[in-house]
Image (cartoon, rainbow, N blue to C red):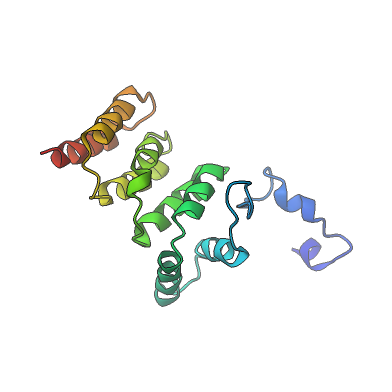
Length: 167
């Protein structure tokens, strides 16, 4: 901590040392899309465990208001560890954004060998109720059945949810 407070000893490069620090980075410009710095900051601020329920709800409302689906998907894709990925996935279902275009992405994330990541992705996927296209649902079942890493209970829950949509 002393090092962080002493400018002469502080080296910003150390913050990206994955051996010693857990740093979530989200690129503002990825070539295809330009994201606002305040939107990235908003997503990162939701990692603060000291937020009150009201503060968290307001931030989640802002995520929904600004339609940050693509930024969340990008952040999940770029997350270096499963703990960050699980937190980002929980933001997806907590903010109640429309992720129907990303349904198969969440099915793939539900096949993650890390249980919390898979569970959070399961929660997002099962909350996307508007998906009932037979081709998409068939692809989802194939992803689940071909996964070597999916947890059996998560696979069962996903299949039950998907099959209930088809009819």
